[in-house]
Length: 344
Ligand code: PHE
Image 1 (tube, rainbow, N blue to C red):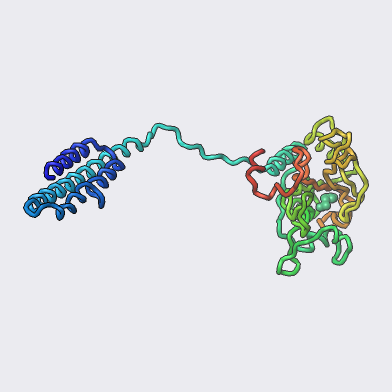
Image 2: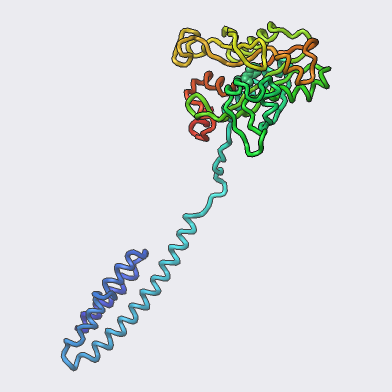
């Protein structure tokens, strides 16, 4: 029995010497020192030995057990240190590797179109005038020849705020009044501006209409400004934005603040006038409302309408962007979906 024990001991020590990883070490422990390990079982069998052998065997088995436990712990330490050293080496950071690129944002598609529009109008002598998003009822409607209770107010579903008389502008046209006062010097100086900015309407959101969208208003006030000036200027603008070969047409319309009023169409840029779902098979796309500034509006801007005249227009940059890129749903613009935005 004792001889068998010594063999187990020697083998265990030899095996332990070759172990270099903690998984194998665990298996070794289970085989020798675990609950059903060889040494544990040997110790337990002491009781079955003839009486005179018990003491010597028991003593020796205990010494072996203690020694193997100590050797095991030493080995465990060694392996842990080796693994740590290996981890440090493998996990070393190569500081010469190039860093991860920080993605750079792009311009929002509406912003891109706005900038194109600014450039075209700047070229034609129109400067940018920024008017306010939060307007008063008077400037948004009354001064634009839309008195309270006038049925024309139905054309714009309005966001009101808690303060009476304060609203979110439903169009950029109130900026006409503010620009005339800012630059007109009491109706003595001409004005040529564009007024870009957000407009807000209390509407059902759908693929075709949003509760917020940009408009670019245009206003020219001077002596002898006529309808032909408006037509020529808008036609030139449309050709620059959509292409020199595009035809433009003007349809009679109605706005309370212009007289006469028109709507401006450009030949459908997708089907080139042939008719397609985007132009609803008409061959034409509407790009602006416009007209000659109404005498009442000129007066409200400080001008004498018998001496001064002007034209005004309102463009929808999101609409133009949709037409240009074949975007079918206006909700993409303010939906903050990167999959959409990253395409521009
Ligand atoms: N403000 C008008 C709208 O929102 C557009 C427009 C602007 C029409 C200027 C004529 C002149 O529908």
